[in-house]
Image (cartoon, rainbow, N blue to C red; front, side):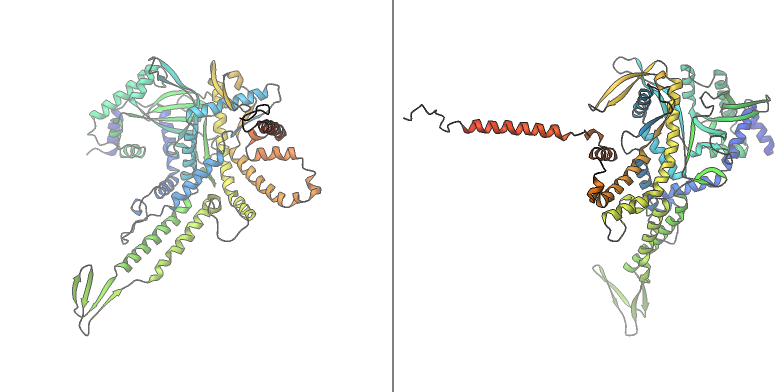
Length: 593
């Protein structure tokens, strides 16, 4: 039998020669991927418990238990965090704000144009759906990754048969935590080189080449096709086991299965790298590799910052590593314990319903209908072997574990609409909710900072790629209608940034409303204090806190009172006219009969 070295050589000999820098980048991929192996195990276990339907699908498998119930407490926490985070980030449609760094006359118009442009694109690109997926990654894995691209999508008009642009503009996209690696010991994610894995089919690549918008060229595509033919012809050869395992870890079986799958595995390197083969330092470059062998492109990054538009959000930072730690990771053991107690209790209860029997002597057993009759001799006996009923107290242990899990996850029960025991005044409940929400607000603000990076990358991408003009919609608050207008690249060129204010604004307003209610019950009871608070300013403040600016109108009730008085006077005059009419319908001059 041939040695492993000869097998490897045989495998390499059937393929075209790999590009030199591709080998270095692929070595980095596997080095950084192995560095997060412990994190991947945690992700897999937490995800398994969140979406399990029974203990058979988890690591909590006990062959001695008859019951396999899985109490979905971990899913309950995950879902509550997901729903509350989404609601906190987007409490209303007006959740974006532009902060300008200059005070020019046209700064206000440009601020409105930038925010209106992003709102329009978010409605058309499915922005909220993508953000919900990123929140799910943030909760499940403790890490979420998003990229921003400028796309032009076309569709066929069913009536005219012409190809039309269905969407053009910036759009964020999700990167699975399994599909990206970087140097975990770097100072920050932005400073670290990173490699992103992408799957594409050969058909997609050929279509892109035909349309002239592909990173592939005909020569590289032909090499890849020849490799697939060569590997298929030599599929009987024993391949290198390390390479086979590597491809299996990327979602394929052995190497032959990958080359026969009709798919192409692409790795894109972003950052700084030294090309020792050409003795050049590539700063802020992107290098695209196909099949782990061929360099498709090697060029500087085309962004204003020189950094890729790829961003990383973490739930909790971990010491000495950029990889984050998720809210569910350290709750898996408690979920394990809950399932253990639930099924042990259920088995004990089943045994109480159908207990084991102890027979003494030789009793005669007869079934009468659904009942079983035991006929025993003088020295005989039949007794049930009942378990200890204290096992049913497991319900109290389960309840305590579930309450503790809520608190540990940063989503206290008060924050999800479940009130803790004990009589409380309205203000006490509000104070408890505010304090309980503090950890959750802190975490939401962390995601909001990540979201801010994504949104500003969208704006920068539009400034760089928008050609000609685009149509946006602007809400006219005075009339409550949408107005459509054209926007150019120059309209977006303003000195400032876009900030998502939904989460922090919602939390601030909630606390302010609670404090004002308490102030009305105490400080505003003193007439000497009341005179220092102008009613108009108080009304403006409440309209902002309650998001009812459209209802606010200075002294708006005065015209209403005048109109009401006019209507009342008009109605009074009509009544007087009606009362002067003779009920018989005859005037005074007309005699009766």
